[in-house]
Length: 264
Image 1 (cartoon, one colour):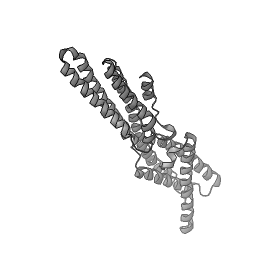
Image 2: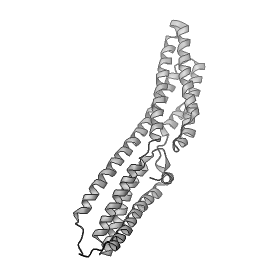
Image 3: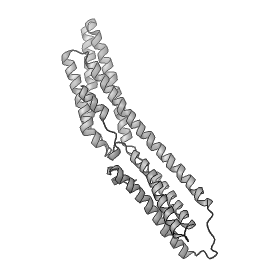
Image 4: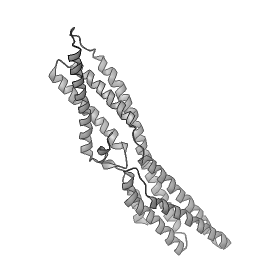
């Protein structure tokens, strides 16, 4: 919706969503008052009640489609983080079978990568950015696996085990890179402005119908508008809170990656 909303706390975001829907309802009321002044209802006829259910149905469907896309991306983000942590754990496990000097080199690169991701790249993802250092550390890890493989080949049959460890190390490093790319992709995914515009337009139309149905009854009209704002505000809060899973109060935390750092 609006960029500033994603830096709010949960309760502030909830209130902001209700306020936005309430503001939409108020704008609809003002619009319908203007329509009544410009085009008076001289026959005193009322809008058919089924008009409201007719407009709420497509409104609910559009919100459901938007929410489905948002929650699917959030799930992809959490899956990518878990897969990245598992691949990092495999790298550390494989490094334990290498000679001491190589083990320290691989472990050092891996721990530096984890630390860079947790401390530097995670905050950058909130702005849709990535860490160049994390990318360099991954490249260095893959290059190290190639060097270990070359050393094992040069040593011949005596280093068959180290050669297999090098192949495993390269495969796991590639898995880390793949999971990281998926994580960064999710961090840059947003609900398109056209979708938010369609939702707000449909909410505006629904509020216009509510006002028209209760224009001559002040108390029912105020209650209907208030409940409308609360109900759809809560719905938009759920969508907005998952729209950017690496931003704001509902951020996906790097807990699994931090655990790998402690284990390493």
